[in-house]
Figure (tube, rainbow, N blue to C red):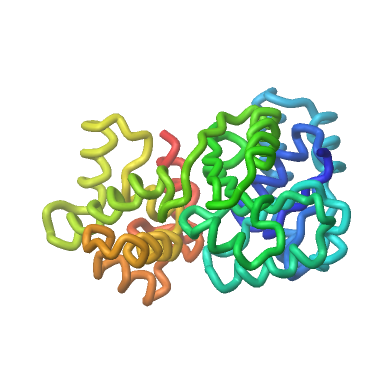
Length: 295
């Protein structure tokens, strides 16, 4: 299983493509525009350059990784020979259902269809295909080339063969796969998102400021990144979307998004991607704030 198609060239998609290509898989990276694909390849190249500078890989390794990736704006052409497809599009149910209907039509009958969704039901996604037993979740963590965890989510009808194949592929990537059942938020976000939401509630209620909340969690709880910094890094719109999925799925008020989060998303303050969230990511301060996240 050497032919991998990745749908979406954004933060998660280009990271997934990078990781597969660096481990000698042939990757077709697919997006709706050439500009998005150029940005994705530019990000992969920059990250590889950083690895070369740190002597983690050689220049030859970098060039081999890049040569393993081909880009496509046609979904049909990009997946026609895929053994495994990993969908990493926006966390939107209707969009994902459309993509999986198309994948079911365009992919060979033996292609495994995986979603990188962080919260949406794999069972629901699988139900729009004629191969639900071959649909599975592969929830990579960001940044993908660095983070070891992959949540492997079984849908209600995911076969053991599909699970075993995806687990083996994950291990070939040098990752640590963890089996998770199909419930809203899975494990990572079911635990993480309420914590981020509570940090936002703490700010909303005036208990402490942004830097103070993050400092307490970094110094007092040994978190490498404060929760408000992390929310900015993930994207406040993504956080809101995941919380909404869990709130709808569990019908439990503890998953209700904080009004401050809702207002910030409505105002377009989405974190790093928009240049402003809980922190200022304008050009003059972007490098400083991003660097602090990894201190």
